[in-house]
Image (cartoon, rainbow, N blue to C red):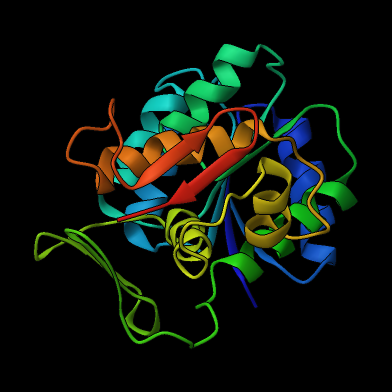
Length: 225
């Protein structure tokens, strides 16, 4: 049974989704604000976090950053905010996905299942992939730059491995959504752009002038040495 931590200040929404997700077979712990959520997260790390952005004490952005500072647990933003800036800022803070309210509980459950599938190890294939100072070891879930291990989220790792197993090939955003997020994913290409930017801050010596994860204007992204 996968455990979820749901941080949401609206009692009605929290109860309704808790009951719906428990019917789907999840163990759901709930927190009414950011501080309580962080305390529960520290007590026992869940398999996945559902996080509202607008909380009454600590903002959801700060909660996400604090969790991401010491954990790779997948995080889905669940929010009424439809502003593009807020959604992108939430992803930049470390979230893996988002849903805007209102939505059907079945859609949320589908997103959760897809994300939990994505965070499992990728299929074994190449023992070691080297791109200049960047070294990727898929079977061990490790990425090193100049010999120093990098700390990537599971989504970032899968994105990098997808590019690395086809070096030089240009991937469209749609292809990366299918291959990394899953063919049953309902989101849009903004997720790819945000995760590429975040990935570059970790694998590139100069993220503003990337050497490895390169944009091919009008087409998508490729990985090169």
